[in-house]
Image (cartoon, rainbow, N blue to C red; front, side, top):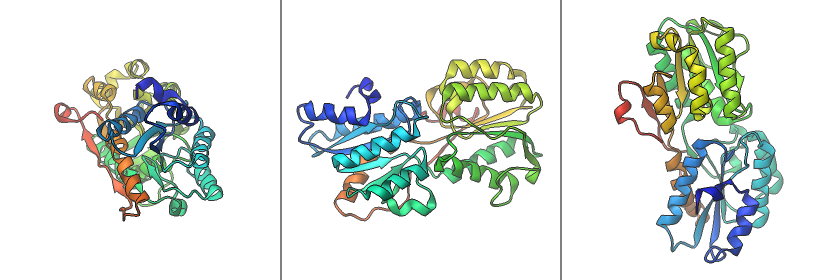
Amino acid sequence: MKTTMWKMTGVALLALAAATPGWAQKKTLAVVVKGLDNPFFTVLGDGCALWNKQNPSSEYTCLYTGPASSADEAGEVQIVEDLINKGVAGIAISPSNAPAMANMLKAKKPKMPIMTIDADLAAADRALRKTYLGTNNYDMGVLMAGHLKQHKPKGGSVCLQLGNVAADNINARAAGFRDTISGKKGIDRLKGEGGWTEIAGCPVFTNDQIDLANQQMADVFTKNPKLDAFILIGGWAQFGPQAYAQVTDQVMPRLKSKELVIIAGDTLPPQLDALKAGRSHGQIGQRPFEMGLRAPAVLIDLINGKQVADPLYTGLDECTASNLGKCPAK
């Protein structure tokens, strides 16, 4: 399938599949992401597409879909509900709003296997899915804190940039970061623990919007000229490389001297370019392509009643200026 097709909704893709020779005879394994406007998920979709290419004779086909905008939480829930109603063979979901997705699943009681990918349901709702495939998000936050400690061992002021308020994966990363940087479990907000204090107005929530993420960074830097650290729990701002360059231009002297340290999630090519240019000091990379490539096989195992481990972690990559040449772009 061509990349332009990924921009269709799940319903539109199913209608097209029914009219496409070869597709009508195949059973659908749906991979539903938070939003098709996020480059991270484009890479995940590439993994799904490669599975189709590698398995042309399979009775199944991998369908990558999601709402056009990552901010459309209700749209994602509706797409999954439509797929359930149409009776697809299995669904892998990256829930943007975990409680809302769980409520729909409780109401629908789907007969096909449901798994989560990239982001999980809340702990209390995980019986609604068979397994989770993706990042150990708590550990991702732990690694972010570890890299910040290397640059700022005495602590300082920090702002965390998060995504959607109800995204389980983002909240897990934030918890891992706060627990590790503070040395205490269950810290909801840093107030001097471990020498770190979250500034007023933070955390900020991007709702997975690239333009908003960059505007938030610019505003924080303007209002807090002595800020010690900015943590992109996800890579949103860096997914808009031109805007991110403009935002970081205003603080480049402080970035070069490490008066201000930026640690960010993900290692897509534009993000490694930013690292190389000194616009961040560390990137903690996930493996979205592996998620998309593995999801169909996991769903097929679930359909066939095989035992599948829960969770299934895909690993993390730590990228810094010193290992940039060997760091994989994902």
